[in-house]
Image (cartoon, rainbow, N blue to C red; front, side):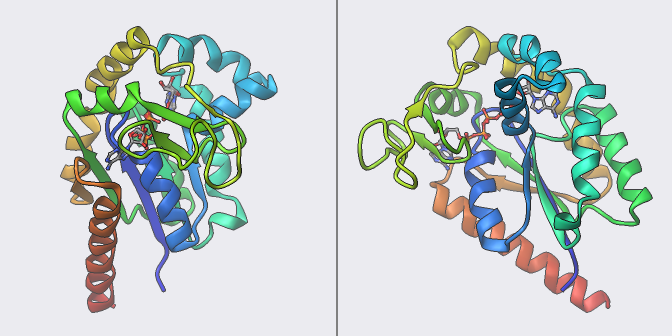
Length: 227
Ligand code: AP5
C-alpha cells in the first residue's frame, strides 16, 4: 500500500479536528494537529509553549520558525513512515515551502490537501458552541450540533469538557481574519500543484467523513493504475 500523507486545510471551526480524529482511527496513521501540540506545550511550560502563548491568546499565528521545527521533527519519526495526517499545518506560504523542502529531503510526497469548506457564519456558530475534553483535546463536541451524552463530560473518557481559551468572540474574529490573510493563499498554491481536494464541510460529520474516504479511495485507485 503506498503511503498516505494528508493535510487538512480550512478555516477555524470548519471541522478539521473532528475529521482528523476520525481519520487517524480509520487509517491508523499518526495525527499531528499543531493547535493541540502548541496548547500542550503551553500547558507544560516548554520553550515552544512560552514563545507561542501570547500569539495564541490573541488569535495570531505563532512565528513560522517556532512551528516549522516542531512539525519537521515529527515527519521523520518512525511512526510516520507509512503516512501522516497534518491538521493546522501549513498555515502560511513560508510553512508550505518549508514542508515541501522537508518532504523532498525525505523523498516523499504529499498525497492530498483536503480543503474543508464552510461559510464564515457556520464557522462562527460552531466555535461559539464548541467544547473540548480536558483529558484529550482531540475529543471535540458542540453543545447543539454534536452534544455529549452527559452535560459537560466527555463520552469517551469522562474528562471534563471545557471552552478553549481562544474561543472568545474577539479572538475568534482575529483568527478568521488571520486565516483569510495568511492561510487562504495556500488554496491556490496547492491547486496549482494539482493536489487540492475540496470537501463540503457543512454536511453532518459522518457525511464529511464518507466524502473524504471516497476521495482517498479514488486517489488510491488512480495510484494503482499508474503503477
Ligand atoms: P488550531 O487549534 O489549529 O485552531 P483552528 O485552525 O483555528 O481550528 P479549530 O481547532 O478552531 O477548528 P477545527 O477546524 O479543528 O474545527 P473542530 O473540528 O474543532 O490553532 C489554534 C492556534 O494555534 C492558532 O490560532 C495559532 O495561534 C496557533 N497555530 C496552530 N497551528 C499553527 C501554525 N501552523 N502556524 C502558526 N500558528 C499556529 O470543530 C469546531 C466545532 O464544530 C466543534 O464544536 C465540532 O463539534 C463542530 N463540528 C465539526 N464538524 C461539524 C459538522 N460537520 N457539522 C456540525 N458541527 C461540526
